[in-house]
Amino acid sequence: MLNGVTFTAEKGQITCLIGINGAGKTTIMKAIMGLTPLKSGSIQIDGQPLSKGIYEKVAFVPDHLTMPLGMRLSEGIQFMQDFYASWNCERSSELMSFFKLNPKERIGNLSKGTAAKYSLLMGLSQDTDYVLMDEPFSGIDMFSRESIAEVFSSQLVEGRGVLLTTHEINDMEHLFDKAVLLQDGIVHKSFDCEEMRISEGKSVIDVMREVYQS
Amino acid sequence: MSRYLKLVHMEIHRFRYILAALMCIIAIFQITGLIRFLLRELGHRELVNDQYTLKPLSFAWTIFNTQRWFIAPMLICIAVLAIYVFLIWYRDWVGRSTFMYRLLMLPTARLHIYLAKMTAIFLFVLSMLSFQMFLLVVENIIYKLIVPADLRVDSFFSEIINSNQALEILWPHNFEQFLYVYGLGFLVIIVIFTAILLERCYRGIGILYGIVYIAACILLYILSYSLLDSYESYLYPSEMYAAVMSVCGVILICSFLLSFRLLSKKITV
Image: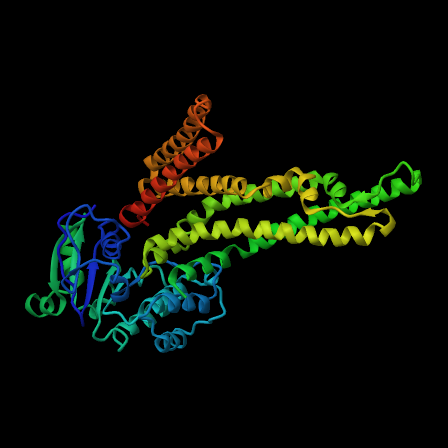
């Protein structure tokens, strides 16, 4: 249950929703994408309330597969291309080769790391202003993490607003511009990561320790 | 192609193997039954060898004598279809991949998802019907290949249908009856879809809501039927038929509206 959650994620910035398991990170993502109805409050995209048009403006990368397991990777891509006007074929081909994915492979046969890469491809191949990513680094091997992290510092997310959730920020915090700390469905603290480093000399992990261990 | 048609295409693509398997089962059962009967019958006729007492062997008579070979695969198909009505929704929620995430996030009205699933089921049934019709033609060819010309007698299509209980149910005698039988089946599926969505929206307590909704619809239908029946002296059969159809229409509209509301406002993944 979320209560009094207020924060903004801006274009051109990577905002990280941080919280321990059950803090409400995924619920926020689902609420933004209209997968969990809101009892009260509102979510606005570029100052406009949520509408059907959101799905052409915001791409969502969940922490698990969202395509039928029997489909081949190429069929999944074709499906997306059929439905999304914002689908960028060139980018999807680029990402296919960058992540070394085999288009003929069945989605059900993908390992956790490869599935995460494929999900990321599905999200980033849409020409949207915002990208939401739910736990993109969760439960995957070091090399997959590295190649996914590479995406965050590439032109693929340049100019876009990225909102991601994670509870594993070791080695990743340098990627984030802004952090929003959640606890029990409430925003505990929201800050600019660089400013925090300069003004108080604290890393995101230091702030997390203060919040969650106090 | 509109997004609705793309969704229908995808749904059909997903059940193509089940459909093909069912068609194989029907074909194997019916052709086996047909050949078995014809060979036995011809063998028997050879033994008796009395051309004056034995009537010619018609295709309708052959179909009449192979009824259980028609009924068994039909029951299998009904069972599979009944399971598939649930599976068409639940497979998108349950398992390692939750495709419902993707479906609900498509930049199209959620109503299209519902209608695509409904259309897919409808096409599934129509495909089976068409296949059965095609199979009868194939069976007629097999019959002609096995039975010598002097022992054969031609049958009308209506004779063939009337000779077999399973086929009689599949192809009702007139369009009104066809509309009633298939319309009722369609209504049952819509009511079940609504119950499934109630369960998906409210989870635990949703099961109860779903059961209550199905029970209420059945009760409404039975009540309308029995009440009208008790006043039959005041109503012509056609008026009674129209009144029952109206009740079915009310159930249909209520189920549609409730389902669309649940899909657009309440559904969660």
